[in-house]
Length: 188
Length: 188
Image (cartoon, rainbow over all chains, first blue to last red; front, side):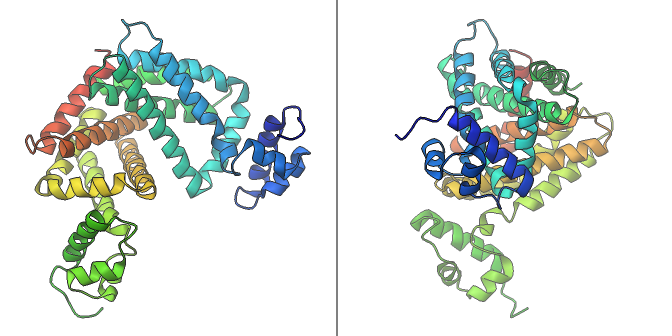
């Protein structure tokens, strides 16, 4: 490891997102990102495998938070409610960064490869949630369905959050989205 | 257009799937597919853009069937029930080809690029269903949630169908999967 740079990772991520929005994802090089952040390319590659990873590096951490939250839910909690509570908890982690989330989403929406990567991320979250539910003793297909439906409710909530007014906060919209999911699947 | 070949498309699709299973998707060339089918490469490219399209060419047609079924559902039908009925109807189209579906799925599971393409297909179905529901006057987020949850229920049903015994048929498993979705989201 080279010289320690204060918050190098955060500075690189911020610079990258700015450049992706200004010039487009495809047109931005790692050299430009490093320069904007006042760091070297070498430092960039100590933190990220490539320029795509800047947009997705947080998703594994979120996936672990989701799994931990579901694993730690009270035994008496229904699977869908454990999943809902996990997404509400994760929602809090986004709340300082609504503007950043909106920028990230606009970059992803503009690029087919990134849209695919985003779908893979969600599929991976769903698989992890289903696994975690199975370990709680939830049988299939209930485990898979609760996980898939839960990811769908979060996805819809997230899109509403970043495209709507700054209030209400994401956790509240997640809660509403799960309520709406329950109403919709009840045939209302 | 060249010489008419009886059922060239079906023969090419069958030959391609056989080869993908025998040798692996990546190792199979269009020349080999055409040869196995007793046709020319030129004929292959009259029917398919590339060897990947052989695996996904039916999905747009299915998407249209789904949209038509939802658009034609009785006005009184709840959104989720219109989506369920559409997937039951589409399920019938698969029933002659369970073995083929199983082979196709095993080829897709073995290749990251194909798995991504499959996720895109499902996202595309979901977007189409949500649009169709909106045109029936269903507001968001209910339209998006019914579509996403419906695709999830179908996905789970399809996996159960191809990995389980030949009976019961896909339509019945789809029906059960939607019932299970309703139970799961009701917190049971």
